[in-house]
Amino acid sequence: MSLPRPLVVILGATGCGKSRLALELGRRFTGEIVSADSMQEGGICSAIDRSVGSRTSSPNRKEELEKLDCQELYKRLAEVDPAMAEKLHPHDKRKVARSLQVYEEVGVPHSKLLLQQCQEEGGGPLGGALRFPRPCILWLHADLPVLDKRLDLRVDNMLAAGLLEELNGFHTLYNQQKIAENSQDYQHGVFQSIGFKEFHEYLTSNNSCSETREKLLTQGIAALKQVTKRYARKQNKWVRNRFLKRPGPNVPPVYGLDVTDVSQWDEGVLQPAVRILESFLKGEEPAVQPLTMEYDQYEGKRNRRVCELCDKIILGDREWKAHLKSKNHQYHLKRKKKAETHFSTQSSPDTSENIPQDS
Ligand SMILES: [Zn+2]
Image 1 (spheres, rainbow, N blue to C red):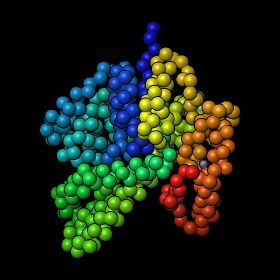
Image 2 (tube, rainbow, N blue to C red; image 1 turned 90 degrees about the vertical axis):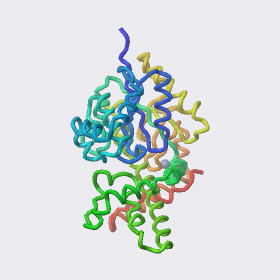
Image 3 (cartoon, rainbow, N blue to C red; image 1 turned 120 degrees about the vertical axis):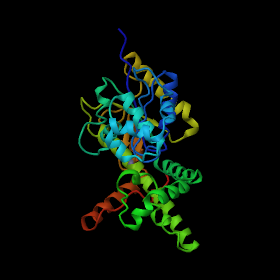
Image 4 (spheres, rainbow, N blue to C red; image 1 turned 90 degrees about the horizontal axis):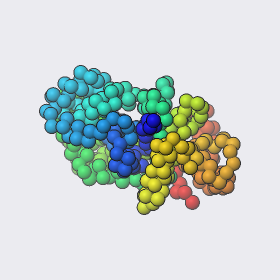
């Protein structure tokens, strides 16, 4: 009797290389990949990638779907997943097709899948995923300063690829009238798409002088970068809260992979992931330890801990002790204490800014 093929879940903040790893593993193990990104462009919420599934792969299905006309696609989605259809614009073929594909392949409406993943409270971690007997969960994790740089670059690339033009066109077509009625709603539907809120003032400043427009654009870019970075922190927090803080019989182990140095991708990310997955396929325990939170009591040089304060994975007990004494950790500790005192008198401080480089 052969073992059931495991569900592989790849978690990680935006810009950590989830898709890259999913593709590489999918290719190597001839699996099927299902991406369940959030509403925000580029999968800001944690993605669940069903890299290795038992169903036959249908790599061309998305292309097939995209050949249908917008109306037909949208109609089909509205039938199987009205909640998702509500959120998507009928002309956004790529997303409509993807949601339809997720429904066809997973058998669960895409909107439901996203809800399970994105809800901070309520429901089990990755509800659907846990119905699989032994999910192999990999968490891609980069040091924050490095991730921040990557996220900034990502925003710059999106701008270079025509994000503003896209937003502008969309804005002109669908928002003008609502602006006139002063009823634009950025909290729902398509307006959750990345950039809309942040560039609202810029997009509606056509009658201002070029200097003002330039300023609004700069502000929009800064806001988008800020929001992206804040989201990445939220994603990591979600993983910590969901998987690492509540160890128990129903919470599967999570294997951490450090993606800080992309030049070490093969040795540091791909190969360890392959070894972990091979162990899963053989029904064996992987040689590497899953992640534990800082209070874990096992001693050893291969223990991996997550410092919640610094949002960083530390390998080894000695390294952990050194980390607790490090400048960086002390900085965060001080900042947290300050924030707590501040919190008791004022509103919530933003702890996501001005994080120093690791030394
Ligand atoms: Zn720390």
